[in-house]
Amino acid sequence: MKSRSKLYRCIECGHTHFDVIKEFLSGFSYLESYPCRCGKARPAATRECIERAFYQSVGTLHESHHYTLEETDKIEKIATRNQEFDIFCPDCFNEASEGDLQVEARKESQEEDVAYYVRCAQCGREIEFGWSEPNRGGGLIWPVESVDFQPENIWPEPRFADLWVKRGWMKPSDALVSIQATYISPEDIKSREAGRKKK
Image (tube, rainbow, N blue to C red; front, side, top):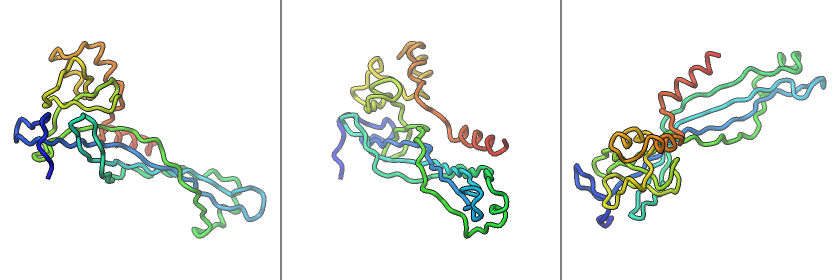
């Protein structure tokens, strides 16, 4: 059983432990090819394939304001994009069967942060928060519902920047720096992937 935190307290249910959730987009690419058996080309044809999905990592916010992410799960597959084959030997490509297809080792793509959340570990309510440095830097998270929360020393999670300006917690010029952190909604990602398929 966890001891009660002296720093954090949910204003709705009174629970003293907060979870940190990170949702991000990641994927991998690999190369498919068919061999050329006549020797005119090597290989007969190739194409790049890309798979992307949303993942969610869940962890704990500690009293030091550090957080650890302990579990990662795939929450939704976004797209599998296969480009058209680049054909170097039409004869061998047309004669090839599925059994001739060769797949090279996959390459992991760079992870894209979608969003971070802080939630009450008991009632699940989302809690507003900021970071120790701009652009989600410093690795320390300060929830608004923390005893030592001081907005003048904290940079908001990007989606809260406009709200903090309205409250007078930061200058509009500082907000522009804060929102430079990557923030792409899942809906935006789906629209972008759908647009790529139509091209």
